[in-house]
Amino acid sequence: HQAGQRQAMCGYFDPFWDKAKKDPLVPVGCGMTVAALLAGLYAFHKGHSSLSQKMMRARVIAQGATVVVLVAGTSFTTRVMDVSPNKPPKGMSAVEFQLLQEEKAKASASASKEESSS
Image (tube, rainbow, N blue to C red; front, side, top):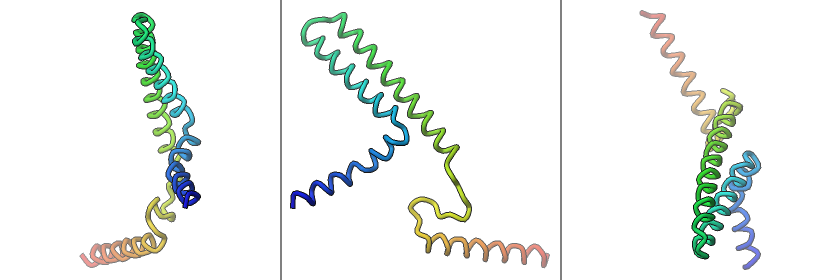
Protein backbone atom coordinates (compact mmCIF):
# COMPACT_ATOMS: atom_id res chain seq x y z
CA HIS A 1 0.00 0.00 0.00
CA GLN A 2 2.82 2.40 0.87
CA ALA A 3 4.61 1.72 -2.44
CA GLY A 4 1.43 2.65 -4.30
CA GLN A 5 1.26 5.93 -2.39
CA ARG A 6 4.88 6.71 -3.27
CA GLN A 7 4.22 5.97 -6.92
CA ALA A 8 1.14 8.24 -6.86
CA MET A 9 3.18 11.05 -5.26
CA CYS A 10 5.93 10.64 -7.85
CA GLY A 11 3.32 10.96 -10.57
CA TYR A 12 1.95 14.03 -8.82
CA PHE A 13 5.25 15.89 -9.16
CA ASP A 14 5.97 14.81 -12.76
CA PRO A 15 4.49 17.94 -14.39
CA PHE A 16 6.58 20.12 -12.07
CA TRP A 17 9.79 18.28 -12.94
CA ASP A 18 8.98 18.42 -16.67
CA LYS A 19 8.50 22.19 -16.51
CA ALA A 20 11.59 22.62 -14.34
CA LYS A 21 13.65 20.80 -16.98
CA LYS A 22 12.31 23.08 -19.71
CA ASP A 23 12.83 26.31 -17.76
CA PRO A 24 15.27 25.63 -14.88
CA LEU A 25 15.68 29.28 -13.86
CA VAL A 26 12.11 29.55 -12.57
CA PRO A 27 12.56 27.07 -9.67
CA VAL A 28 15.93 28.69 -8.91
CA GLY A 29 14.22 32.10 -8.73
CA CYS A 30 11.46 30.69 -6.53
CA GLY A 31 14.08 29.21 -4.21
CA MET A 32 15.94 32.51 -4.03
CA THR A 33 12.69 34.33 -3.28
CA VAL A 34 11.83 31.95 -0.45
CA ALA A 35 15.39 32.11 0.93
CA ALA A 36 15.36 35.92 0.97
CA LEU A 37 11.91 35.94 2.58
CA LEU A 38 12.93 33.51 5.32
CA ALA A 39 16.21 35.33 5.98
CA GLY A 40 14.35 38.64 6.17
CA LEU A 41 11.78 37.26 8.57
CA TYR A 42 14.51 35.74 10.73
CA ALA A 43 16.42 39.04 10.80
CA PHE A 44 13.22 40.87 11.73
CA HIS A 45 12.55 38.35 14.50
CA LYS A 46 16.07 38.92 15.89
CA GLY A 47 15.62 42.69 15.80
CA HIS A 48 17.96 43.47 12.89
CA SER A 49 15.64 45.83 11.06
CA SER A 50 18.26 47.10 8.60
CA LEU A 51 19.17 43.58 7.47
CA SER A 52 15.49 42.64 7.37
CA GLN A 53 14.72 45.52 4.99
CA LYS A 54 17.65 44.57 2.75
CA MET A 55 16.44 40.99 2.59
CA MET A 56 12.90 42.10 1.74
CA ARG A 57 14.32 44.22 -1.10
CA ALA A 58 16.30 41.19 -2.25
CA ARG A 59 13.07 39.19 -2.17
CA VAL A 60 11.31 41.71 -4.39
CA ILE A 61 14.23 41.66 -6.85
CA ALA A 62 14.25 37.83 -6.88
CA GLN A 63 10.48 37.77 -7.43
CA GLY A 64 10.75 40.24 -10.30
CA ALA A 65 13.58 38.27 -11.91
CA THR A 66 11.54 35.08 -11.58
CA VAL A 67 8.56 36.67 -13.32
CA VAL A 68 10.80 38.02 -16.11
CA VAL A 69 12.38 34.59 -16.64
CA LEU A 70 8.94 32.94 -16.59
CA VAL A 71 7.54 35.33 -19.20
CA ALA A 72 10.65 35.07 -21.39
CA GLY A 73 10.65 31.27 -21.20
CA THR A 74 6.95 31.07 -22.00
CA SER A 75 7.20 33.40 -24.98
CA PHE A 76 10.26 31.54 -26.29
CA THR A 77 8.52 28.18 -25.89
CA THR A 78 5.39 29.32 -27.71
CA ARG A 79 7.42 30.70 -30.62
CA VAL A 80 9.56 27.58 -30.99
CA MET A 81 6.71 25.12 -30.43
CA ASP A 82 6.15 22.66 -33.27
CA VAL A 83 2.67 23.36 -34.57
CA SER A 84 1.93 20.96 -37.37
CA PRO A 85 -1.43 21.03 -39.17
CA ASN A 86 -1.28 17.22 -39.47
CA LYS A 87 -0.62 16.61 -35.78
CA PRO A 88 -3.40 16.58 -33.16
CA PRO A 89 -3.19 19.31 -30.52
CA LYS A 90 -2.20 18.32 -27.00
CA GLY A 91 -5.12 16.68 -25.24
CA MET A 92 -6.92 15.61 -28.41
CA SER A 93 -6.93 11.95 -29.40
CA ALA A 94 -5.89 10.89 -32.89
CA VAL A 95 -9.43 9.66 -33.62
CA GLU A 96 -10.98 12.99 -32.64
CA PHE A 97 -8.40 14.83 -34.72
CA GLN A 98 -9.15 12.63 -37.75
CA LEU A 99 -12.89 13.28 -37.41
CA LEU A 100 -12.26 17.00 -37.13
CA GLN A 101 -10.11 16.96 -40.26
CA GLU A 102 -12.83 15.07 -42.17
CA GLU A 103 -15.48 17.58 -41.07
CA LYS A 104 -13.28 20.46 -42.19
CA ALA A 105 -12.71 18.80 -45.56
CA LYS A 106 -16.48 18.27 -46.04
CA ALA A 107 -17.24 21.87 -45.06
CA SER A 108 -14.56 23.13 -47.43
CA ALA A 109 -15.86 20.98 -50.29
CA SER A 110 -19.46 22.13 -49.76
CA ALA A 111 -18.35 25.78 -49.58
CA SER A 112 -16.44 25.48 -52.84
CA LYS A 113 -19.45 23.81 -54.53
CA GLU A 114 -21.68 26.69 -53.42
CA GLU A 115 -19.20 29.25 -54.79
CA SER A 116 -18.97 27.49 -58.16
CA SER A 117 -22.76 27.21 -58.51
CA SER A 118 -23.35 30.93 -57.87
